[in-house]
Length: 284
Image (cartoon, rainbow, N blue to C red; front, side, top):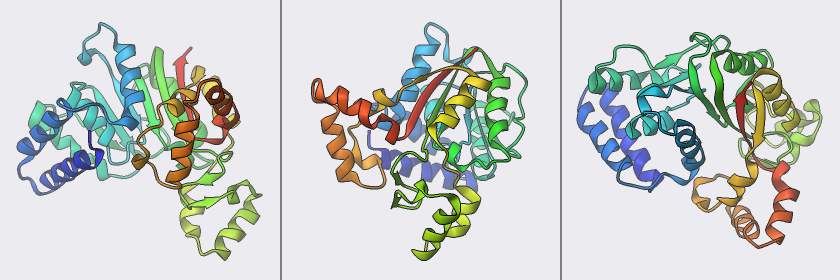
């Protein structure tokens, strides 16, 4: 599947929702496209986790939350696959437009995309089977990070799954500022260097909170349950380099090295802590 082609169709749907035109037709184009093409490379791990968890249950029995849904594209993809109990929360109101899809296509008045305060999730205890976030936790400030994890533990069902993709401080390249190693410095020195090279300091201080991977592992264990590190599996599937920002040639080299018999396993052990962390956590 061409992710750029699907994104164009979603952009057309956004325009339809914002201007009250061709909503049904635009959604039909997305649904048809999704169900007649392979899963996008970067969505495959999460979709597979969801399908494995579902087993013989119907899609209508599975409740899914995107915790920090951004533009909501992953949830739209799941909706097109047939999962109707999908919800997204974000501190921005941009994804709220997608509530029109539920109302006009599925006759569901309840809001599935919600703008919230970033602290307390607006759901009852034990509501969701699966909660996920894709590169969100590095944007959660120190006043909200504990609530982020504890609220997931509260609303996740027993034996439910939390899936997280987390850029962190140990990775040498920061794709947000497009710089190498600077975030290894003490915070005051880190800000000083970024000022010197002309980085957007307001973005860094207000929106970027890179933490050590140990922090995230500890909070998963403390507030949700036993986690499995799936970084290795993601590295083994590293193929579509065009999905990534940053040094694409380096990613291409990594994608080839990890697949070399024996050498690849050793290489993964050496680098897995220096790339984006991937975890699957089962609620205790």
